[in-house]
Amino acid sequence: MKKNVGTTDRYIRFLVGVALFINIIVLKPGLAGTILLAIGGIAFLLTAYFSFCSLYLPLKICTITGCRCDTGETSGPGNNTPQAG
Image (cartoon, rainbow, N blue to C red; front, side):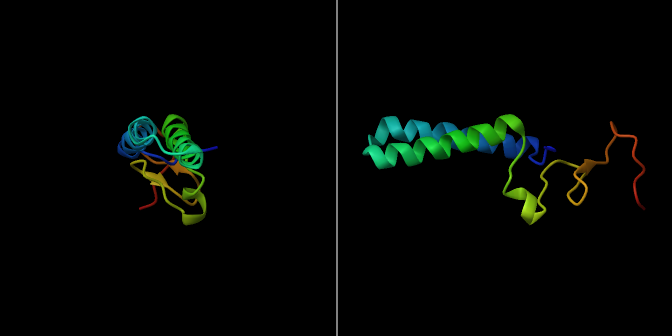
């Protein structure tokens, strides 16, 4: 499981996950609403924690700076892989 969620994306996902849990407390939805908001909140918090989003794989999206989505490798200052150029 290679990381494909960058820092800004992680912060946004964390805030959305927390907001979904706050909505459970504030809105007091029924059972179905509580379950849906909790599942959404857990999904956002887990993707923020693990820096991995499975929906990004088929879309070939990587929000990490210097990430090459086809290989999942990063090409930056901390990586010794040669850059194409």
